[in-house]
Length: 268
Image (cartoon, rainbow, N blue to C red; front, side):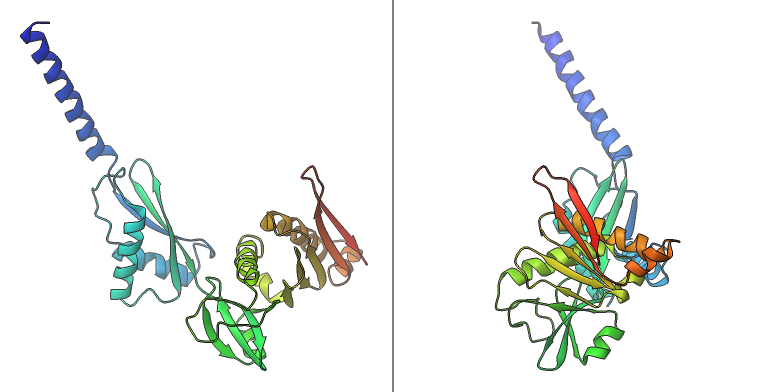
């Protein structure tokens, strides 16, 4: 190969790399940053306000490469920025999503009173992130929209700001599993129809919603609970009067066959 041909190849490679860099900076660079609440509808007034604050104070450099964005670093920067403008209270940044060619979405949850555990006549209220946020009377906890959670162990998270924990280690895992299921399945306005959630039985969760919904397995709990809740919802809001009666009595049992098929049944 002659020297001239080698130079041509080198210059061609440089030209291609330069073109790729130009295309990357022109097309695959951050142009839009949006915020999205995972557990509230987008047109809720408070959600709109929070979205606006995040979109104004995200700290992600506009025009930076979509490929080199570090999600964990971005979450840390957003969190610090929101603390500086006193806007972090009540939310938790969960994920950063890249939508090519040029859009970033900041996913977060709004923290709300979710479950309470009774101890010594007081209700210890935990948010959907699992942090103790209040200690009040039972009626006050219910008025906040929190649901009673019956656990196996003795509550050991007793100071505000502590994460949910009991003397039985599996309670914390079950707490997280149940919250995730409720967040995805139960509409916010339906949470008040839940009297309690019982996670004391081995491998099962019982939810009192007029009927008792019993989910026999914590494996894929969300999908199993979705099936049971859908039957309750159809009973409660269907046109059939007999079905409406069923929504407030009896038991809905959710099980799974060996082959993976989910079985949902109602009994008086």
